[in-house]
Length: 351
Ligand SMILES: Cc1cc2nc3c(=O)[nH]c(=O)nc-3n(C[C@H](O)[C@H](O)[C@H](O)COP(=O)(O)OP(=O)(O)OC[C@H]3O[C@@H](n4cnc5c(N)ncnc54)[C@H](O)[C@@H]3O)c2cc1C
Image (cartoon, rainbow, N blue to C red; front, side, top):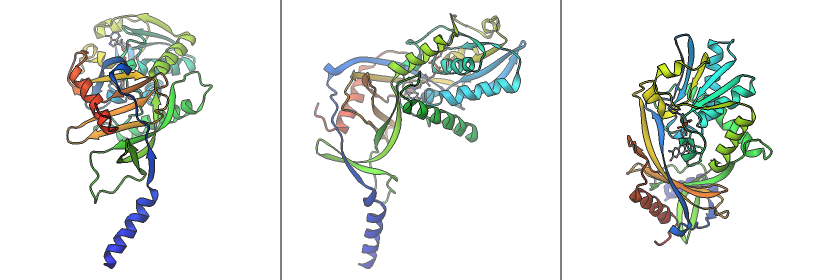
């Protein structure tokens, strides 16, 4: 008996006292609220983001690609790291080419220009056509680059996180569209003997209680963020040129001696990088619902799938599908329906 009270008092002290009860507002996920579907291919590099320099025919090429589902999250850290690599190799050149106008290319160009370099971006797609415009918009730096150098990875995360925190808290910043919101993550099941997460809560949705991990997370509204980033790079007088680079030979014809390769999945063809694999993802976008001022995610551990509901200022975004090795951008109705159904199930919304 005494043992039972000791265990009970340990549980109450350690878990229940920290347990918060929240009532989550219910989103409207009806078909009539859907304003758009989109698909994109995450540029996943199995053995880690490629951040290194190589010299070919006297041109210094600095690679910065392969960010998978973490490209937005790691963009500032990656760009800064790539520029540091350039400085280690070359202190003289001031005319620089950036290949790629997704979030990685634009962020690299933004920092380079702020440091006084003259920059030309070459790309075959620009905002809003890039993969970066197809992202769900949440801080997701831990996509899983198991063989990446731990110290480098931590540095990329820290630099990026600090920058996004700064952008989220500065409402006069020239780049808007970054917010910090409460986030609730439900796992499939918490076993009795599982240690509950440090900060947990019981979230009530339509009268049904769920044990969730509560945290704060960063949201990127891409209708605002990517456009602002693009506009700021343009205002800084970076040159933009349409160019389809098909091979290293094409790349070497560019007049600049320093080239940042931020071509995402394009590096598969240009640099024959067999480590790059597309991971297709779908998004469903609903009308903006300002009363939904939190993020909800759920992992289905057995099926290794998840959904995330992310409130942008301009739309409510539902994402989470992952199809490794799928190359096409077709909208798969089954995937869309499954995504909506899993979100409805979480909120106990009848179909
Ligand atoms: C559905 C989905 C959801 C996602 N959600 C998130 C999220 O919530 N958080 C997060 O951090 N990340 C997320 N991501 C991942 C993120 O979108 C990518 O990691 C990021 O966009 C990669 O950026 P990038 O600049 O490397 O590539 P891209 O945006 O693909 O840009 C590549 C650029 O290179 C150019 N290019 C390529 N090949 C050539 C060529 N041969 N010649 C000329 N130009 C070329 C392209 O035209 C383009 O301008 C998501 C991705 C998807 C698909």
